[in-house]
View 1 (cartoon, one colour):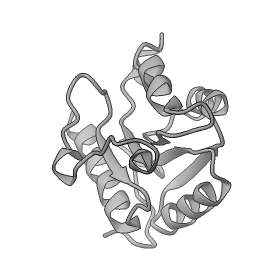
View 2 (cartoon, rainbow, N blue to C red):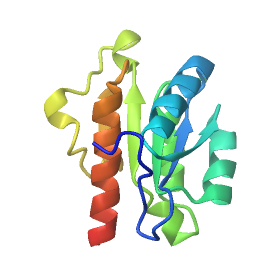
View 3 (cartoon, helix red, strand yellow):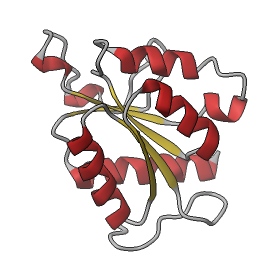
View 4 (cartoon, rainbow, N blue to C red):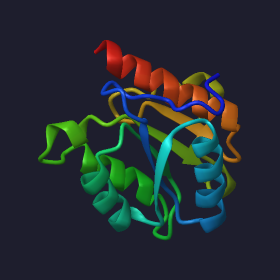
Length: 149
């Protein structure tokens, strides 16, 4: 684990992570543990701000909450980004964080966390509360995949 070291993207600079969540405590906590692991972190408290941050910062990875003020707004945000006019932004890896199982009967099982399929164009799902080490490891794996590709 690259704890305390800067994690580089394929350009050799600090890897950028955009975290989108409507819970200020979750934003703050996620920012702290990702920055401690060497990432440059940007946050947005909702989908509109998230889109602006995506376009302004061009992050290497997005960490996106599923459940926002308008129900499963994270899904709609992701689907709209996958149709963005900028091909680079369309292909940014997305990790979805969810507490959807608390308000619906839907559940993303651990076995489904790495392979989401074409129907949901995210690279991973994690149930909240998320384990910081698992999240950081998944981000690093996605960055390594981008370096190879």
